[in-house]
Image (tube, rainbow, N blue to C red; front, side):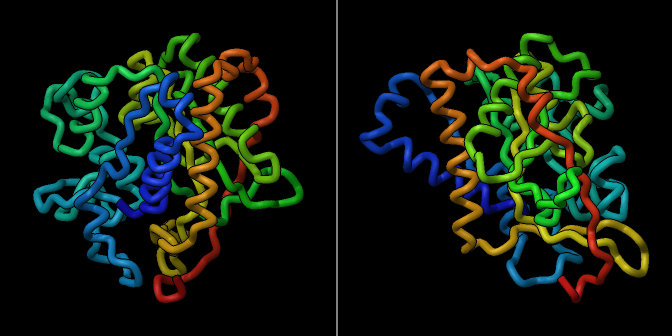
Length: 287
């Protein structure tokens, strides 16, 4: 809900695909776009408002039971804030209705179930899961440049099929080639939970890639030491939207013309480097 600039990018992608110059792509591909999954969370994300009390990343569910503070709600089940809502990108199920954290219980997140239902109807050939990452994510290299685009394929230890993982790495390398003057790196935040979209749909047999673009303002709370992030960034920052649009269109073109299938998956391991993130220490008022 707070990563809304990629939603603007998704709409731009649709507009560009509709142009006459891209008729060849429309003949080669069927592209299904979900511009915004967490609609309620977006509606409760008010630009310029302080975070506390607003379920920006989470959906809106007063009955939610979770782990506070918000950072724990990202990494510990149940993935939510009590009385606020759940993190939809932790609840994508293997079946159609179960809670990935406790499969004997029903899934409490309608947004995740909606994505799962669309997946079951469409049965896509690939999936791109678009998000925004901290703007101050730095590369592990000595030059310390910020990472513009971060990617993650399905966590291998979860048991993804080798052919699926290989195709995900091909797509990741296509993302790398899309921006030769930008820094593309592996996403380093927690990304190994099976209920995350890029993991779940990879495990279900569809090559799925997490694609993160700079946009979140993050810091470490001075009084508690807890990492916090304020979402969205400037919704008028067209350069960020253009970067996301360019990257995804480039990936789609490589799929449409078949060039992605010629990529050696090992190139992704060779050229897409990890990054290190060190947030500044501060307070909510400073952000």
